[in-house]
Length: 384
Image 1 (cartoon, helix red, strand yellow):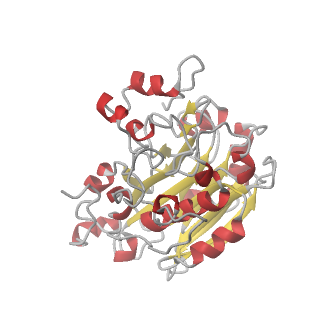
Image 2 (cartoon, helix red, strand yellow):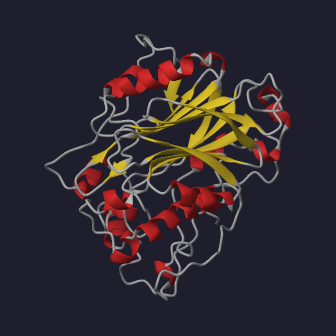
């Protein structure tokens, strides 16, 4: 069972050391931070975990935000590396859907809106705390990662994200969350090259839900139901599952593959208990598993370190290939918490690669995946 790592007596740095979450003493003395003694003209190294998933060099488009320092440019600044070795190992000899294979990459990111940022106690430098900078960092990460399905929560500027992501081949839908204080909500985007949003569902203001299909899927193809959900304060977690369950029941979603991603509360909440309790689950949504098993944290603010974000998937349809690990503690120790100049939210983005077990939105059967060998399958490790 996933666990929460919230504590009030220990600082976040001490909790990291207690958990042994990466970062040696030597690394802690000299962390990589753009706000320290770096050469201002030396851009941080590329993140292989970000860019080698697709073998891309990223987008070099420059939009200066009133500074000549390249470290202050949200689109030139490179992301620190994150461990994606489990994806690389699981994907060996297999291909992504857009290359004729059977694997899809799902990303989920709980954003920190401008309104929410103004209420946070944060050490984030002034240039990086602005919404203009942080929202462009979100798009930069999406461009680097190239997910097939993107679930966003805490979205306060959907029109901007819709316009920017469309430039990079993604289309999306948005639904406001009723418990959000400033009209924020959830969004789902898909990669237009291979996928389309066939229709949307109302899940009673707890998030966005859509039926995702392959672009040229046959009429009888059931597709995949994708839910981007947001457990906001004041909302009962069990009610969230009720809303999702009731809204999708008429769709006969037992025949669909399913992804439910987003911020859904700590492991002790009724929602997570209900989802993970396979023996006593009273809902129609069954066979759900979490892509991330026992992560050290997904939320890292100045006052809290906890697991609150998930990517759930129907295990009777999907096989998990691997996930990208949380940000290494040694990378963060200079700041102790998020957001910072590299990472634009106090939640960490989640990235999970899946392979379909049975035909849904795929043209080719995964049972023939041994015939689909992509010699250019990206190596998601740091180049030697």
